Image (cartoon, rainbow, N blue to C red; front, side):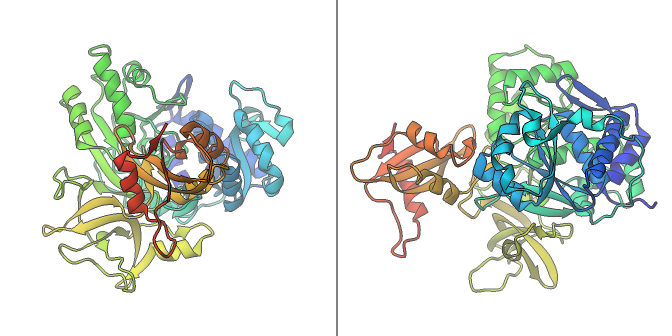
Length: 543
């Protein structure tokens, strides 16, 4: 069979080339490329035996683990589509993604069996459950789940699957700028080129021109790289593929939270060369650990610290440089819809901007003026940071959102990233960040209206608006401005307790401001600018 720019084809080529190299480390779990390849084949055969096939969607509802990676490759091998499930979701959000993604199977941590049991009657098409053991003992039979290793037992290790395609789908679910998750549909070739550098990030050889050329991008000296975000996030998921498709070792943190001291100990123990973080939210605890434990660890193996997915402030970059004078710091721009859209050039044109990248035939600023057709911005004009070429095909099951985000300009399709930007005289692009009300808190995207609906479930709340306010660690924090019902009282803890029943913990407000009358426009639409002014004034803050 001919080879394609299909992630499974590419992985198999790499595994055949460097079978004995270490491919994965996650806590006590370690695997070579040959071992991952063999296990993925076994899981692929099990999925086929359960009726899962090309185009079917399989949920990956797990913490970081070898099983997440094995399940991912198994899906790609049989042309099925793995779907990332945020393990922080509560009932309503979990039901939404299971239903919206049209899942037929789910690989999950045993810990999540009670959550699945709550919704499974509403998603009858999910027939197959595969459980990854952890330190819990929930009953597998309660959802008819099969233990992961038991499912693999006796399955063939042969690579005897049907021919794949460049256009097989990789669907990445993201909170984006709407309340519920959206599935970004990436053809394999497009995501490989746009988000994974075409295999060229690790060697600097540039994108592979043919699938077979992936072997020329296998690092002669394998880089040991660690992603600190969980695999359920695109930043880590893509980084995992980048590492392995370069024949490098992927290291994952088995911890459920980021503890700076633990990470630096891993760097020393595993001789890690590169760290991939998500902005200041991860930079701050790492830097605090370095400050508190000067000269505790041998960190001489580190030569790169890279960030993407959230604001990585210049002050935090400079602090890293003070500890690591010879380390290469990278700050990339991009999104679940756009992949990697370039790296900050380091010379900001505007103080309040996130940074600058170079304009090209595939990176530009597209205007988004109400009542006007989209067009390329002129010098000095603001618009939306946009990408063409290797882009997704749209949002799964959402043609309306697809039409708003993917637009045609001069006969070419462009992806509107949602980031406000300006085209400078030197043809660079200054990026200002989200032009919508989306709150990016430490890389997690939170849509205000969704939080507002959850807040209104509290019987003391008459009306509520949610805005972002500055936070040193996370860049922004979710802040609630609330109007109470007459005669009612409310504390932040009480509000969070009720809201937690409806939304994930990272979406909960970190500050509460209580006003007599919530600011709204005459039309009734929320006056977010005024609400933010109220929050920033601290005049109405509640305990």
